[in-house]
Amino acid sequence: MRIAIFGGSFDPLHIAHVAVVNSALDKLDIDKLIIVPTYLNPFKNSFYLDPVTRFELLKKVFYKFDNVEISDYEINQQKPSYSIDTVNYLKNLYKPSKIYLIIGEDNIEDLDKWYKYNELKELVEFVVASRIGFKSKKANEFKSLDINIDISSTQLRNSMNLAYIPIEIKDDILNLKREGKVFEY
Image 1 (tube, rainbow, N blue to C red):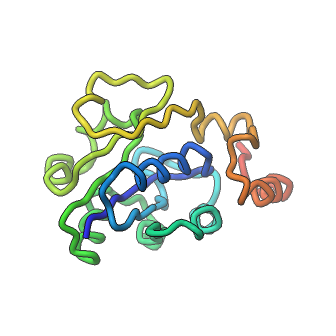
Image 2: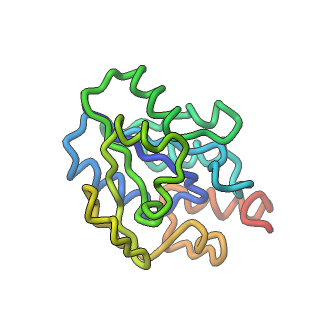
């Protein structure tokens, strides 16, 4: 079995995330793609949408996708999780012959700061999802997925342009916003 892991905050989930999943399913030789929303990114100290809400929104968007699973492993930890721990958990669970770890191009420059990076790079092959506005010289060292949609979750939290929100969850995001449960600073 060959798997790809796509982790992130997904805070909020947007169309570039969906494009990454579609591209990975199309371009990578994998049997399963596992999306792993964080409880809290180790490089951040807060989140906007609570972890359970982000998990439920991911399930709504990806439930029809073959070979895609949404994992609640990191959310269940109820603390910041490191990629190495998640990779080891999924490695023990699935016993894959190959593990791809999908990261955004904006993460490349700080990859060596990740917890147990040297151990992690022995376990996985990194795959970089390209992103407009981030051109890393290191990007050509990795397998890549050409996404190039000019949006980030940070930009969405600031502007809430619904054109970038997957149609399956637009009403949910509007309701959360109306209820004051999302994007308040």
